[in-house]
Length: 337
Image 1 (tube, rainbow, N blue to C red):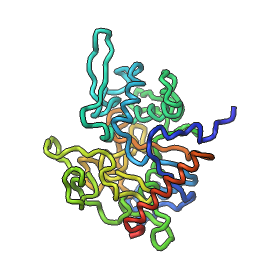
Image 2 (image 1 turned 180 degrees about the vertical axis):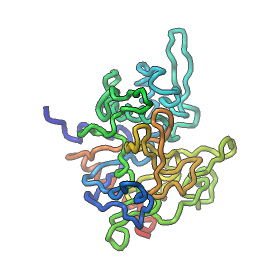
Image 3 (image 1 turned 90 degrees about the vertical axis):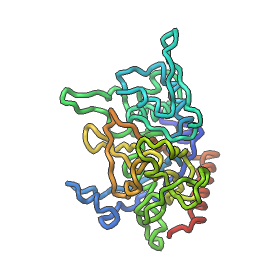
């Protein structure tokens, strides 16, 4: 049967979205991202995307992830992740098992708006769940964007996980190109010729690390990147959206700081590329051509979701408002600096 239109198969689900336009933009050049050209063969097409798409404005929060945890908990088994925290994230506690053998879950007090850190396979299941309208049945987590039947390991230790999302899926983990474009490409840069900012803050200068105003900062800080020393209890973790005037050219927040984020790109059979800095990684990890790697069967990172752009009627009107809001806020802070 024909697929339903995006307006019915890609609802907002309570997430804020920014639409990434300018289809067919050029890739990152050797001058803008020299590290991409050190590979053999060179990564000489990074950032080009030939269609419009959406990215969630912030990383997925503990509140948003908790709904998924509650829905998937009856089907989670120990063999799916090395540690249950890969499933729940560090911001969702597990209690039990109770007298019936079942665990219960709760958000860590005060952590509602913290970005979650989870395993790649769980991020894939989250996207499947969105694709299937948040249905509570087990099948809703098994396909849609990624077939979990491929989540297997070979005798030599390599993995068979589906490398790219299923064509036509309404939600998925952003590709390397989609993440790079959304965070760095600015059609208005260089007097309207278009270009990539070095950092995901619409700037070629590294963002300033520090506490946001809401946590007692003096207003100069632009990111939580590298804000914590390992084991330091005196520096708080920072919720999403605490640097509202620091954004990508498309209005995306927290491209710097929070948690480094999973992408779909599989450079090798055992890893997925991650992008961005986090609480422990300095802002230098935000550079457009910096590539981190996460062993998706063992590491935990942040999640930002990609989506098709809703079409007609009220959904289109909503998308236009989001676009206008993103650009208005960007222009207020100086546009193409």
